[in-house]
Image 1 (cartoon, one colour):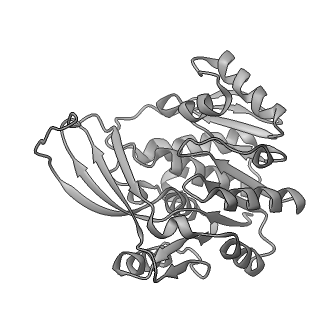
Image 2 (image 1 turned 60 degrees about the horizontal axis):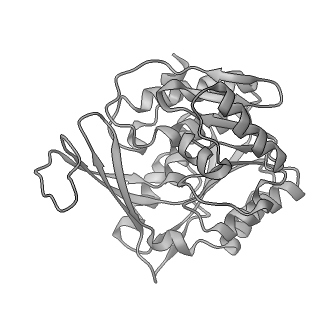
Length: 301
């Protein structure tokens, strides 16, 4: 039986343009198809978790504008509890401009807008509404004081916080101390630990550094290669299913969303990571961020 999950993070409107290749500095090229999607790392993870079968409450801050209203309606349609979403009339909804090349790789520029105004009071109000929640996940498109508050709250109240440290940024030591799980990719791992992950040995070295800082469990996502687990019951690589990637935009977010659902259902670490890797592999075969998140029935096939 899964328990409630609170996702704290960003919500953006994604403006996506497909092109054969990325332009060079100062160069103008003709692109291809244009799409508008709901995005933001927090929102992507919330939708991924809900589609994977999670009971999800999303905490974010939007503008009181057309993009913001559309986002709230969209998350409601995804069976996400939207009662802790705040709309601010003083800031616009966040926007991300995403270019996707012919190999499915992406380049992203984000204008945070109202996301930058999410504060501790917003999160505290959400927690008070769902005090029985044991599972939390956040990212670094969230203001750092909110991340620090979540880390402190979950440690003091024996809750489980998953931190996806993306986009990469330095973190205060108090975030690590007692953290249930951190899920960096290879780039983020190198920034946070100084260790360049090139094999299992270097992955383990990086995880040991997180452990010395107080992190209980670490999963380093390795893209198409899967994920390296350093946990209380399993250490090693979980391989990902080989697929033809069309768009990798939200693969990491789908992994994290599916992972926290599996953990909330009391799946063992290896099984939970396999579930998350499968969800991420399915997602890269589709265009878009949230639109690529698979349903529970797709993952369970």
